[in-house]
Length: 359
Image (cartoon, rainbow, N blue to C red; front, side, top):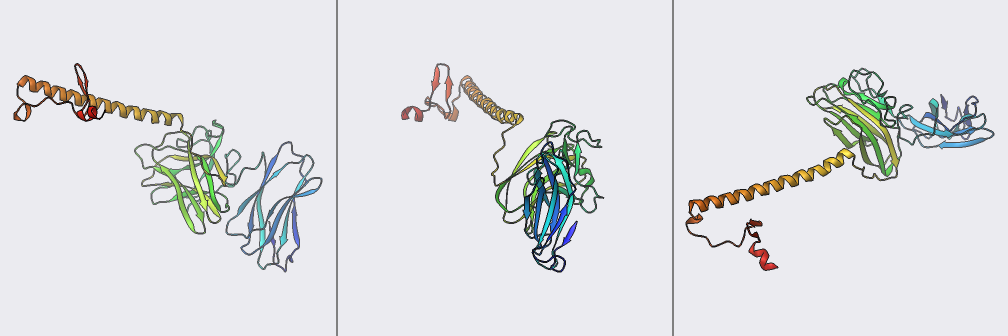
């Protein structure tokens, strides 16, 4: 639906209304989402009202538009019959317009912008097929969805095969640097924000590796802020990215493939954008803690074994010299007070002279 906001069609200050049919009372909170597109020139103001016993305004949008559709969302609670009213208030500017599309009412509260658990869809994340991929792109899937390739058996949100996630099969990419993008809705400029998400990757060891990157896309171009690839464990792993942008931007998850084709999935779940918050370091998982504690133990054991071998070598060398009866260097040595390292004698421990004189 579109309304012409030029002065000839809708004079400055005049209002064009779009009213829904009456809906039954809601037993629980619901989320009304819609996509809107505003002209580059100042189109005026888009106002959203929920009309129950009386009309109340729940959203007002008056920013200039751009080249992208934007996602709007409104939390709705109604104990009586209700309807939603969209109002376009003209600003008296030539070639201005406001457009609406894809209105949807879903149970539960509205998710935060650029946040999604993928249980009820993509939550405003959208995908555009890369040219030459035959329409293949990111998809909405679950562990119960039949697949030619191994994909996550369960999602991260529910931990069951009925839970959903975003999925891309890298086998359709092929060589040549092609990619698949999953884009967020446009987000306002931010000095600091945190992006948290869970990802799942798994590729055969003898194939080239799929790669997952996080890009920030704005009018200034694209900036890569995070990336991973390789033969990863077949489990959900957490990613955290500090985000900053001086202008409006979009978050882009990019799936790419370096080299030859490889058959394997890249999955995303529980994406959360925390506006105005710093990222906290994720707590190590049980497997990470096991690795962290086993590495120092292995290094310490190796050093201890090396020290024992060195001491055995020194003792063996002295024993061989005594049996041969030949002093080293061609003449007899004065008894050494000790060695650089601690010497374990039969009668105790002898410390180097430098140590005994300092104490």
